[in-house]
Length: 382
Image (cartoon, rainbow, N blue to C red; front, side):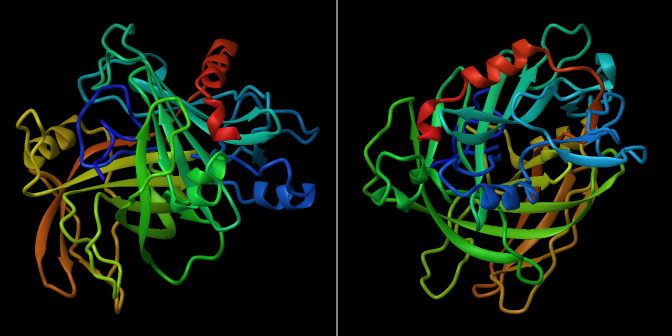
């Protein structure tokens, strides 16, 4: 299945990829018991957290990750966060408030009796001297949720189109939002096996705001899930749920494998902020429709200086992939991946990256929250 234009998480500029991504989380459907809802909320990896004072009120001066944050809890329905998550400016950018050209919030939104998480983005093309790669379209969002097993992205929205990620559960729930469960995984809610978990995941990309019929066929994507400490661009280390979604998978029933995939998207979730970082990697022989190469995009990325060293995967016995050490040089960030069965080897380049560990201490206007709510297509809350 072809990647979405741009990615699930970023849809400010249309860039044709091999399959669509990205962006993250809700809490629990209202029909479940309140006790079960409370349990899931305690391990919510999609909604951003806030600091609270001893009297239980929001601490307006600090954000999670700050040593002076005495107690942390999840943002609640209707609350206004006191900070925004921003990417980092390029070396040539002069952005106000110390942020980059894109800001976002990860908030819970309720429609009827169900709660989902919206990871909502705004670009800032009107700020003098602050020019990012997404100038032109100013808003975008991903709709996210988590059940008892996985965190996942249900779909994404932009002024261009609404995209839906449909799973084989559609045959059981053709008209309910469960049809979008477990199609694009971003983490395991239960305890991860030691190291990295590999699997093939079936899904189908659909666009448009109407509820479509269940797909007759599903694409299979190779997916890896891990949980590990990671050092972000801010220099701070957070326990992170890290997933890699390859554009295809090998057609080998014996095991999960990458096959001919030329792209992968990686998401990083933290309990502190929700979706905190996104990466796109391209294989050495990938070409964009405009003629750009993986190598040229990787060089531009490292020259901008907007991201830090990516997470280093580790080899595990019996796994489909063997990972070389990530190298950073004038050609960008790159690593060598080897299929342990076929021994086929390719160099993969980090071609796009947004690290949202840059905390901007300014309030979120009610208009931004209302715009996020308006982007909530009811089909994801059925």
